[in-house]
Length: 617
Image 1 (cartoon, rainbow, N blue to C red):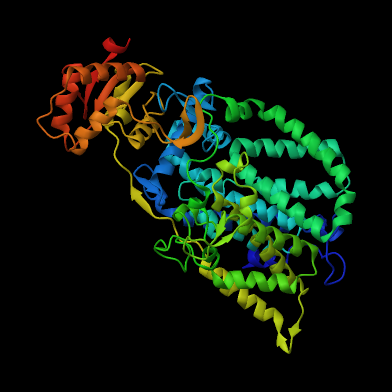
Image 2: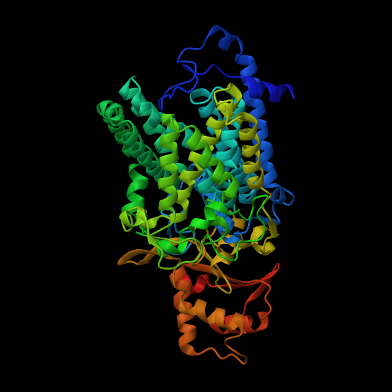
């Protein structure tokens, strides 16, 4: 209770008189700490530590089911996404250990490879977690990352809010929690660590806000450029969403304070020029990889409106919220992972009321404009309430088809709304604690009403633990390292039947020590068409094995000479050293086909192996 009291009371006095509208870059208490502030630094550090522990507890609460059996469970409702991200972490560790390229790999989709920059990225988290991945496996690193993302993002927002925006630590803590544990962040914790890795976002936002301040343009530009570059190596997608949010906030700033905004344009442009040049130097190679490198793509395979939110999603509850439950059958979002709004009626109405009460504050006006604009963009080309139909044309039509935008998932623009809402909540709590809200409204005591209304709005969206399911088993031949006797480094092991996720899981379990055919990724349609698509078309032999495995090719199965020749050609294409058949309900049929293609197989550990090195060397 002492730590909680300190969290609620720590801070400096607000600038100016009650009701004064501070600018975006105004810091409560001025730039220099007072004597009392200096004396309270140890207490402030204890309050910060208490906030961090609270955020860690919340993050472990959300991911608790995954920690109960780290190697045996998949966390969340999108296991394929977790499988791919575990492969990315395993590949990053492999790249560190073997000094290989972290931005491109032929260890998936052999032999053509995968452009990793145009997929989820997370190169920097993968490199930082490489020692843990090499020691404990990619599954452990994934759980650490998805847990740390929530706690780290919350603490980063808390830090920036408490130092630069609000005067009470408790207000900053509530705002940070709203930003990091909102329905959008919990939904994306279902397999999207590149989306929840937002620990640098508040720092970048504050550096952008400081463009309106005096200072050293070169120094400020280098700091901003360094932060942007680091975020690039964490998640390019979040960096773009952040840039869009800053542009929307700038538009709001121009609308509400045009003269003051135009006055700082020269300095801001100077800082941005330095930041842009520094960022280009640091990210030149991965930028080239993204736009021109092997396996690069343009656009997203799906129509933007397929992933657009419905307007009703903003007043409904998410699957993982306390007031939520089973996935909404109305499909207000494309899937559970893309539930990027879902605030519920109480919180939506509270936000509207807060903006109305604090409308004289410049910060609140800009935040409200940014939140509404990004929410409208998340609704896609056509705004519909709940069911897709003719609807009303949306502002996203102005951006649709533009470079970079065409590769975005539209629903994720609501992440900007989520951050704006967290800032608004922090301001409201700060005004409550500092007594800067009106005491009464029409004879009704306003502050208790606002406090109760905020609690009623936030409690229903409290996060519930993500579900976990048993992960598909991987043969001991793979996990135990038996494959090393049959597959040389960089060569391919072909699982039978060839299935995208089997390839990914086996590769991860082996520490990406061998290459696999196909996989789970976004790539170009063809060598001459860089339009984005999911995966690749299977080779003819992969189709044959799949037909046998599913029973589409009924017994007795006769392999023709043409199919045998094609099988040899395909293992040569894959640069395969071994073809491996695990336990399967149609194992006898598959064995007979593989024997016909490559000669008799050999039982090794818990699999059958066909050594094809004599055919492919």
